Image (cartoon, rainbow, N blue to C red; front, side, top):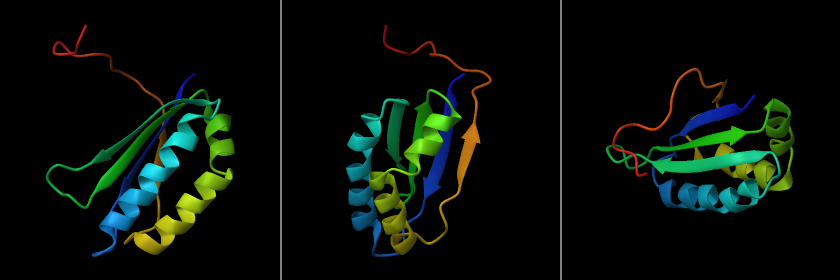
Length: 105
């Protein structure tokens, strides 16, 4: 069963650009992990200093392995310096969804 992880990030004032760069650097090595089904990074359109990640994993153990890999550890260390809050994500499973009417075919 697929496992999803959602997290919201709010950088400290003046650290937005540096955090954004750190966020973008961790995406490619994460996407290359065998247990990573998908990972998407978002930037708020209404709150330009708010970012989010939604990642999908083959299972929770794949995510647990991801959390221990060097690129993830480096990102979390940078996040600790750059964020206004601790990193707190939501471990979840999908209970409803699918493409909407306006989705490209």
